[in-house]
Length: 242
Image (cartoon, rainbow, N blue to C red):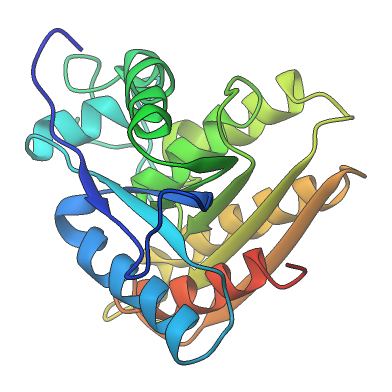
């Protein structure tokens, strides 16, 4: 990345050097790490829904870095599927996704594996444009066994994450994928209908892959509130066969 980056690490309460742990990596950690870490402890201690896990947060430097790091192309359309007349996702603001993925895979994951006892089962959680990132990297990543994709911006660049998956994802690819959406929006329905349709399209395409374990969920919550419910159900689903 040619700059210093922080990561935040939440260990299990009962972390022991002789045990090994799955790792949950959380994008947008500046907003999502504390909630996800707290839920992981709650789901283990009081609901016995998941094993103890290490939670690793990946915070972004600022909003501009976030948009650049989580995208692979620019986008000439908005969440309504219409022409983006503002130019918010122009080429000068976007497209650093591959270096960011390389940072995760070549620096962050090896560092965590070196410092702590991990078992190789890594999950990546992404919300909004972070969910788009998770979907896009499915065919090209090598470090994550499972993905949690929450209210993802699959509309981005006219569905290029879906197009990328259809072109590049091997039919034998194995993964555990949880996809969720929030259906409440405080405004005209046209501002959310296309966004929801694209999320449904992602799920419909992935379900056809025979070696993918795909779970979908819908919540009557808005874009931000749905994260809590997604993490509770998504993490529980992730480890339901443990």
